[in-house]
Length: 79
Image 1 (cartoon, one colour):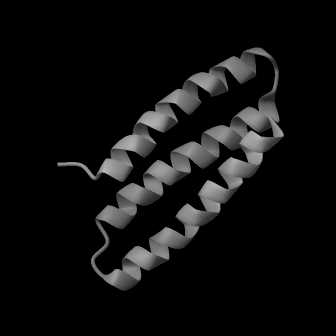
Image 2 (cartoon, rainbow, N blue to C red):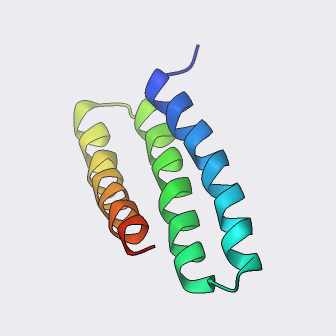
């Protein structure tokens, strides 16, 4: 049984992958790469945090997640 946050983030990442393809077709390489990295990073970090062995391990994984979320918001605001 998956975490709802993971499922939402995963589905969102699939949408970003499609957006990435569209941006690459329009030669918007830099922003497309940043969006792709940020969106997929969030899913990877949530997945790792779900399998953390302790609260401390979870918090250690949560910090990059927050950074990735902030990077994504900034990158999408630019475009």
